[in-house]
Image 1 (cartoon, rainbow, N blue to C red):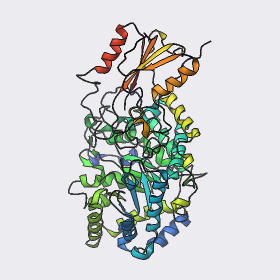
Image 2: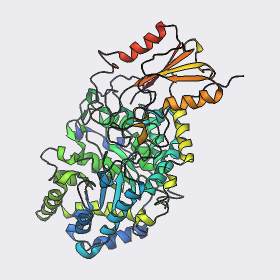
Image 3: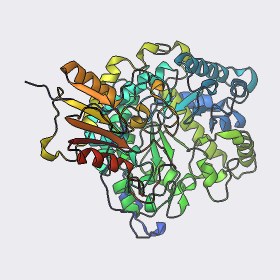
Image 4: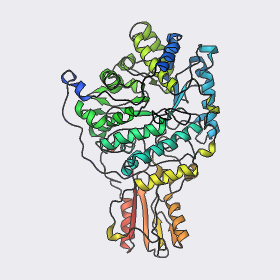
Length: 562
């Protein structure tokens, strides 16, 4: 009896077409019954008197400059270790395509060294007079995807197709471990966008167009990253999570990235807020503000949403971090000056580029002249310190000496890749099986064609080592397996024959052809499309399939998107 051929694809996922559902209704805030729309959440992580007392004690000793420094998050390409020692930033990040020493091939040891150097500088009180530990935040959105050799998982849309919340928690736990190997404290995930228009370039970052799936997944990934509130919450095996992007990023008009969501307030809750219901109830400690607008008002400057809804009505007591200079898009703001965002409820400015210094200085001046109330600064810093105390950052050793730091054998280890393979199997979507061609007999003579067949970068998509997932080769994914390589292993072991020819050429006619094709990798902005036609005006992949069909060869088509 022949064993059916198993195909594992570490890839992006298919997505179904959906009609636009942004809503044409307009809304007047003064007329809404907001209290009936936004529930008070029963958040699993309750305030603790000892934590609150510790935060209050730290706050009492801080100067205005020290407080504002907690609210500034620069990027590793724009600050030095000495800057950290001088200013004592509350956090910092590496954006997509940023690496220690500006080297894509930085080793895990390079990541750990930078984390340790930054941490030690932050607790060195000789210059800035404070010893508050800093936090490093990173976009580990489908595994620790900035680090070469890390385990990569299918993107969120593929995981949504799996519809398996328990698997999602495993994936998040694996990701947390690999992130901690490099000394990092904080992950900018999960993305809980509920996509209404697939022309949006970040569609693949959303789990589903079904708010219920998104709500359940948000809870699972938060538990996987942070631990359960009643068990190992923010233990030495966990990282801080971020539910993002608050709110409505998946519902902009025409799927325009950073565009305008014109949903009614009820729809905003029913559709776009369900990921926050799940993630915040599970205890997520940070929320990232969204680039998009709601009825023309940028969320980064929307006090009603950030403060009245998120913090007051829903009861979120962690901190709100901005997105990449998102405050600079608020009316009347620039990247280096935006009191409107702080007054609206933003607690941390994500401020890459050299705008961090004037933003820091301007914010201090705006507090002194009364533009920003001191009470708002105190609230923001209280929230930041609350999370740091809950996460044990004041008690943990420096990053190089933590539980998983430096255990590089954990990055991409086999048990982690086994979880990824399970995720790949469960994320695949079979669109049709004409004439019951599948499963294939592995003893057949098989031709593998298509430019994605032996291209790990293309099957991994955006946010894979580089920001857009481009300019990578298979060598940049040690431990990864291309689709052709996976097929080759199975077929060879079974005694079949397999040949790779991207253009579909052959000397001996094969029994079957497998054509692997699809979109090039992309991330935010670059993925936006006017329409969903694939290869409009240049149907070269369709031509390849038709060429093989015309020669009487059955074809299995594997399409990679997102």
